Length: 278
Image (cartoon, rainbow, N blue to C red; front, side, top):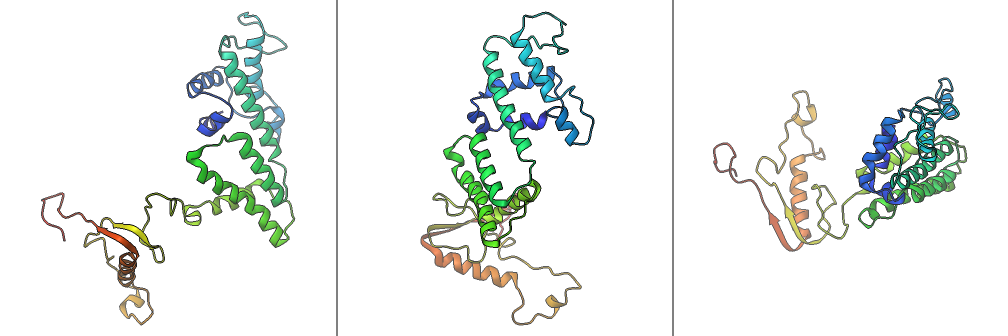
């Protein structure tokens, strides 16, 4: 239950299913009061290696909510072995309808994604899932495009490699997570606004203004403290890596890349005794 409700807390999912933020408390209360704990239904629990009981499953809880809305209120009365939940009334019926739409779509997707398929089929299915569950949002358009590009890349991998063996969802998920790491996608770099980044080789592309922040003597250039058993540091040779030499090169790159202004700042006074820091 917490996993499903956490998914419903995502703003893009709420927009897609027209669920207002103030409704989340009511929906969580329903889930708690109907004692929904885990498992879609009995069949889902069989797939997870346990007996096919439906008590405290999503099906049992949603059946209670539906019966509570449909039947007259009779405290403690069972209908077909199900105890109606009697607190669904008024505008809550609309919230219930949207909640049912979300859960039915989610559980149908969960069942569908359990089937192994080829990479191109995974690409198509997961793109459909994005459209079904995530509403468009201008603020997150870049992330959406990155995810779509990652999914389309699956089909390209199959086309170029000729690999047509069906794979499980875990394989696809691992591939997507590896592709979506910040180091791979370069999130936030050259997005049209202010770019914050570390000083890395080949990162200094020409800009009108470049600001180097935190350039204290202890922070830049970096000071190497090699381990006592590091023989390369003890007997350096031409071509060995040097952090200090790299930083000299990075500073030169930044200087050459600043087209109009170069701004350098550092902490100039100690927070302990106000003494000057070079």
